[in-house]
Structure formats: structure tokens, C-alpha cells
Image (cartoon, rainbow, N blue to C red):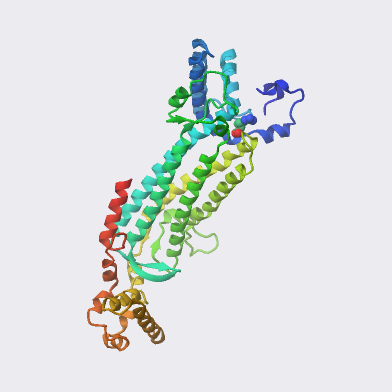
Length: 459
Ligand code: ARG
């Protein structure tokens, strides 16, 4: 921990801090991972200072060389990021130690408030781009599987009860749609994050002529912020990222929940690969879907981070307050957790083996054909509401006699309605039921292929 004399802000202090205050106040443990962004931001700021006449060419050159060598030393592990209040103080004190007086000029026209905002926006840009790339990969994997299983039958459930037959490809495309929306949300959030706060100072800008267009351009920001008070206290872009991550985690959690359920002996729809399962220390027969369960569990953790961030800014007066330092751990946890989950899920999914025979069997039998039977009567000019009632009676009859709808002979069907004819038999086969749902957005194999094509086009 720094002593009083090391502190770059200690001019007006006569007493030193309690060591506990130093430890409590320090954010270095979390923000050290921002060293790269912090140095990039400082390089851009120094360039603007030189352009505005606050640094001589020689001073700028010394700062540039000094910062670049600090960057290389930290990267290579030669220089440990430690013994400072935060990453900004660390870089500045290393620089002054290295190049002397010129280093002390770097903070001209700048505050840690616009500095940390810049660092975090640079970090967010990288995190959003990384997430978008991971989602693109995942969607590609899901679509390949969907195409492969475009015609594989399975039941769709409502209320966890078998509802109507669909295709595995249709099911998989449903998740591809969700992941595509996630990707779009991250791309949209990135637009608001990708704005340069440098030049906002502590809260009210600076008297130095820092060329804001120059710093923004050097850092690759398409624009700079329009209001200095907003710029130093805005954390919306972090909350947005965490909210987008939460929605994405919800999607991962839902599909994981299905895989957990489907891998049970009761369902037996899927076998999660050994590579993503674990055993039990006591029960030798176990093969546990730990990876899927952990993704489901970590979803709660990401929601917790989102809640932490929302609560952090609630009731916070403008502009910067130290509370905001607490944003980092939550944001980094969101980024790390989401990245890990997307990476491992994208490997677990294609390694899983679908039990297509069990799925197809589950798509038949029971009362899955009930809707199509009602539709059949409706197509014979029986009002749908009446048809619904007739089929309801047939279902009850089946329940009492222990039969499935498809097991009833035509003569028995006709005793419920004379409108039944021989053509009903073909219509109630699961593959026919699916094939006939051939409207846009439907589960028929051709529509699944359309769905795959459309999402690929949007990627
Ligand atoms: N470590 C601080 C943070 O993360 C940097 C900004 C400090 N600003 C200040 N006025 N004390 O928020």
C-alpha cells in the first residue's frame, strides 16, 4: 500500500491514512486488468496536450516512450501492477519514476473521473466485440445442427405436457433466434458505449485546450460525449451490457435446463458427452450434467451483478462518487462468466448425442394429434368450437380405455362424428402433421431450412 507521501493527491493532508483506509479504498485488485486501456487513454491524452501546447514535443516523446515501455513490461510480466491505490495512480507513478518531471505533467487537464470512464468504455468495447464473436460462433453451430435435424421429429411441450409434434431443427432454430437477438442487443449497446469521455475532467471539463476530436479519433471512438457531468457519472453502458448478458444467460440457462431434463432416464432424448459430464464420489452409476447445471447456476450470479450495478447508481447524485468504483468487480464478473459459459456451451452442444428414435417415438402417441383432428373436422365445415368439444370427448374415451388417438379404428371415430373418413389416418401421422405446418415460422422441414437460411443471412 502507498504511504502518505506516495499519494499523488496528498498535498492538503497533514495526517496519513489508517492502513485500513488504504486497503479499503484501493481498487487495484480489480482494476489492474485495465492497465492496457489506461495506458492507451494516457497516450491519446498526451497527444492532445502536446497539440494544445501543454506539453513540449520532447516532453510528449518522453511520456510516449515511458508509457509504451510500462505497457510492454506489464505485458511481459516484468512489472507487477501493485502498490498503488488504483491502476491510474500506478501508471502515473511508474511513469514519473521512469522519466521524471515530464511524467508529472501527464495529468494536466484530466481527472481520474474522465480517465476511468474512458478505460471502462474501452474495456466494454472489447468485451462487446468478443461477446458478439462468440455468439456468432454459437449461432453457426446451432444452425448446422438445425439443418442436420430439419426433419427429425420431436414433441413440442406446453405446460411441460406433450403438445404437438415439431422438428428438432425447429427447436434448435428457436434458440438460434434468441442468440441472434442477444447478438443484436450487444451490437446496439456497443453504439452507446463507444463514445469518448476524455476532456470531461472531474465534472466540468478543463481550461486546457484538449482536442476532444483528436483523443476520440486516436482511441477509435466514433464520437465524444456531449456533457461533462453526464460523462463522468454515466454507467448506463455497463448496466446495459449486464442486462444484455443477463438475457443471454437466461437463454443459455433455458437450453441447459432442457438438456438436463432430456438427459434423464425418464426422457432419454440426449446424451451429454463425457467431456462435459462428471461422476459422483459416492454413487458409481452417476453421470451428472455438471456443465449444464453450472451454466444454469451462473445465470443467477450474472443477474446478481446486474442488480448490484442498478443498485449502485440508484440514488447517486451527480456527478462522480466513489461508489462508482464498485462497478468494476460486477462488470468484470459478468464479462468473465458470460465468456466462459458461451465458450463451453458452444462445445458441449455439438458434442451431445440426440436420441432421435426416442424423440420420434415421443412425438407419436398420446393425444398429440388432437389439434389436427379438430382441424380436420373444422375443415369439413364443423365449427372449430364444436370440433374441439367432439375431440375432447374422444380424448376422454381414450383415457378411459387406455388407447391413443391413433389406435382408434375409423368406425369408432365415426361414432363420435360422421365427418371422419379414411383420409384421417394419413393426416394423423406425426411426420404428416409436421409437414403440413408449412407456413412461414412453422416446424416443417422446409420451413426449418428457410429459418436457417434467414438467420445466416442476418449474421
Ligand atoms: N479508482 C477510481 C474508480 O474506479 C478512479 C476514480 C477516482 N476518482 C476520484 N475522484 N476519487 O472509480
